[in-house]
Structure formats: C-alpha cells, structure tokens
Length: 154
Length: 333
Image 1 (cartoon, rainbow over the protein chains, first blue to last red):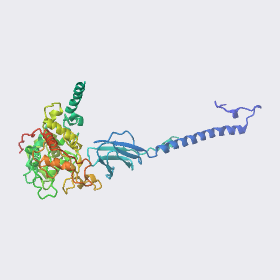
Image 2 (image 1 turned 120 degrees about the horizontal axis):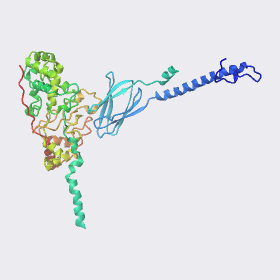
Image 3 (image 1 turned 90 degrees about the horizontal axis):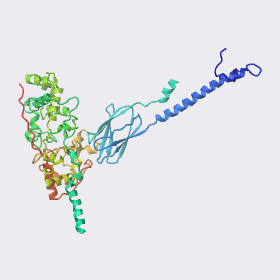
C-alpha cells in the first residue's frame, strides 16, 4: 500500500489501530488550504508589483548648447519627460509624433524646464527650431503589464 | 624689497596680458577639421565630384540654357554673386542675397530659412525655381540623357549611364562638399603661430569672443552656429517664420547665421544685402537691433570705442584666406 512520504497523522492509525475519517478529511483540507493561501499571497503580491510598475514615471532630458545629453531611461506611455535647459542659450524644442503631428514646446531660456507627457508608444523626434542640429529620437515601448503574464504562468 | 615685489607683479601681469585672448575663448574651438563629412548614402568619390563640378558649371541645367549654378555661386565672387539680390529676382518679393556655398558640407540646415535639410535636397531647389533656373527635373533628365558625354560621366560616378534626378542631386552635393575656405592667417594663429595675425587683430579676437559677444552666434571654425536668429533688421521678410508656426516667436524674422569666412570686401552683407561695410554691420549690433518679441536673446547692445571697432575689423579680415579658385570644366557633348 502506498503511503505518502509526507503522510500525516490522519493516516496513522489511532491508538486502537483505527483510522479516523474526520482526520482524513482535515488532512486533505489542509493541503487545499495551504495551496489556496499560497495562491492568494502570490497573486496579491504580483498585483502590487505590477500596479507600481505601470504608474507613470518622470524622466529628465538635459539640453546643452547644441545637443541633448544622451539618456539611458526607457520611457513608457503616460510617462512625463522633463526637458531641462542646461545651456547658456535659449532653445525652442518641438516634438514630431509618429503620425507627423508636431507639438511645440515653449521657448526655453537657460535654466528653464519644460515638461511633456508621452501620449503613446512609438518613435518621437525631438528637435530645436532655432538650432536644427539638435535632434534626438525617443523610442517609447508599450507598457509591460506584469499581472497578465504572471497569471498566465500560474 | 618693493622693487622685488614690483618685478614679481610684472612677471605675473605680463603673461596674463599676452594670453588674454586665450582666456576668453579656447583657440582649439576654432580648429579646422581634418576631413569632409558626407552622408552614408552619398559618400564622396572623385567621379561623383567630377560629375558634380561639370553639372555645376553647365547652363543647360536651366530651361533656356542661360544660367548655371555658377551664375549665382561664382568662384570669383567667393562662390556667391556679389549682388544685393540675385539675378532674375528683381520682381520677387523679399528676395534674399545669394549665400556662399563654401563650407556647406558642414551645414545641417540650408537656405536662409533652413527649409532644406541636406545639400542633396537643396541642390534641386534652384533648378526648379521659376525666377532662377526655371526648369523641371524630368525634362532635365531627358535633356542630359541625350548627351553622350553625360551618360559616360554618370556611368563612372554611379555605375549606371542613365541620368537620374537622384544622381544629379548627389553629384552636385558631392562637388559642393569639396568647396572649402582656403587656410587663413587666423588658422595659422590658432595652430600656434603667434605672428600670424597682428596684435590689433588678436585684440579684436578678444572683443569678438568677449565684449561684443559675436561668438554667441558666430561660433566654430566656420564662424556660424548654423542656427536661426532675428537680429532685428528693418526688413518685412519673416525668414524662417514663413514656414515655422507663428507660436514659435523667436523664429519670426529669423535667418541662418552666415559664415564670417571669405567675406566680400565691401559687402553686401545680411540676408537682404542691406549693408555695405563691416563698420555698418558692427554699428547695427552695437545698437542691438529693432526691439521686438522675436529678437534673438543673443542680441545685446554694447559699446565699442573707435579703436576697439578697428581691432574687431582687423580680426575679421584675418578670416580671409583668399579666393578658392578652380579650373572650370569642359562641358560634355
């Protein structure tokens, strides 16, 4: 007869050698409870993580005399981009969307910061009307929704 | 002891004075580059340059066969035309002075208003402009395809004897990329020859990079920042403002900063050829230009003495390395 290595007390005969049905039921229930609890904790934990990672974030781009400083962040839709003029001259940045729409930011005097919210995924070209040599592309990927992928694995 | 202190003081002060020009701006910022840039899709080759040179001087690129690129960008006029406004533009509203094509290999925006973003793009514009060469690219291709000499030049340059619009643009751009200002006395001074320019000119450099702040726009070895500024000229021409949204205030009345190399002796200067001497130009900047919302933030009035003005002009003249002459090509039949 097969016995589980992790046989619990429910399978042990009582003092009198008789099996106790209620204990059998409790044993089974114990595993179910443990498994359920594990699932609940795991899902709630992942949900918490995915919620924080999908919230919009703020990123900084520094603008110098005739160039943007290279940035290392990865932007997602709804993130805020703060463009900070670290140069000694004024700039007038405009952003060209993937569909050709052009958004003009205000003239930016030295030291000023202007903000722009990323509307969706795609490639956005940042240029300066005054200094056409200033040009950079911001590649925005779709936001990763972790709860979907984690649920799939379970 | 006092004498020793005085001597020590002089030992400090004298070097400070002679290197004053260097403390204001780094000479290395004006060093000439070692190579000519070219886009990856149109690398420079001898054959393309040769074809481009031939096209540049060929009046058959105009409808009536009377005008070539070299008509307005003439070698003996510093690759401009020496006119206030170009030939044929007398009836054109807000006609603009012909800019030089020298050093255009380094430009990131072309034309006074920057509407062309590459030499290849710009090369076609005068050919198809009504008051300039007044031609059509399809008709030009057909005309040149009928000339055996051009087919063999295209074959050498592009491994394809068929004349094409792209080939014409790329060849013209390639030739223009080779038009570079000859070495000037200023360049020798930048490279360490202290006797290359006069003391007055060195003082002028200090004023250029300091008190007058010309360097705010006339920067780099080409003395242009390739950017657009309203310098407050009395002109109705909106320049870049003609095609940039009106909300971009600073671009109204804004024009590209021209180079200060190879300046014509007596002008004309400015986008509309309205000034005819460097004294007149400097006076305009001293006054700060017309005060309006679009005036460049770099335009700040200042005052120069007669001596300072003379020194500044002496410096500007050191940027001239003489005319860039070339041998005019034989045109193919």
